[in-house]
Image 1 (cartoon, rainbow, N blue to C red):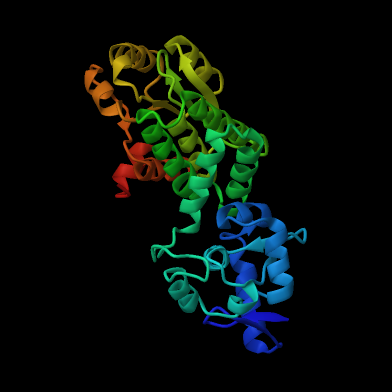
Image 2: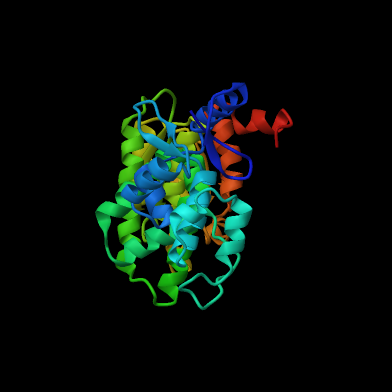
Length: 345
């Protein structure tokens, strides 16, 4: 059996401590593990090279998943990234494979045999590098690669961690790059479409159990990424979701909510240019739905729209954290009145 020392080295030998460590790593796989192809993208290596380093130098000891697939923790990815930097600077893998993480970090900031410049000592966190890799693929319109990486990440991390650590940073970076002219609007549309497909797959695997949360954007509002993140978080919280999509007239949203007996209608409002129309749409939706149906507004323009609606009776949830609190309440079937009266808010 291969076991890893605290200083980052691996050697052979079986004892109780190593068996215990292996079991702990197996448990960790349930919430912090990535498949090989995702690790390769995160670490900047090829799958074949990672396999070769494992076999010849035991630089990492992957966990085996339920179907026998290799799974790697974030610590493994960070270690592989360090090795990639050091080897890329000109050192042989055989000379550095057994070094501790601390020693590798020292080498990473020194010039190597073929490197005359000094690299920064700051090593990006694996998921930050993962986000950067997806952005690169989006710029090249590599639809298949991005879809594969996103699907692997949501399986490895779970919907909540995926939303916070991958999808949300991606949305922010894409918005910034688009504003600065570094990424075309087609790149944003490509990511949105893939997140929508990913959400659809997750929803198809679920059996509805309770009255759903209807999610949509009102007429004139076409920004969708934030709404997709809320849908992912709702599924992770155990709530049922009816995802209607974007740019829907008030009458269509009301009809859907009534037919499926929605408990919540959640609406995303981002563009301030659409504010006047959004106020009219929300006013119509609120008037047409019974008071027992909760109305949630989220997004950059939600506060301003709510302020423009006469006697708005819903909630404005301006952060994902605030949204998660309400999703937890809905998932356990507690009304807002009982939630507040019970001292939960």
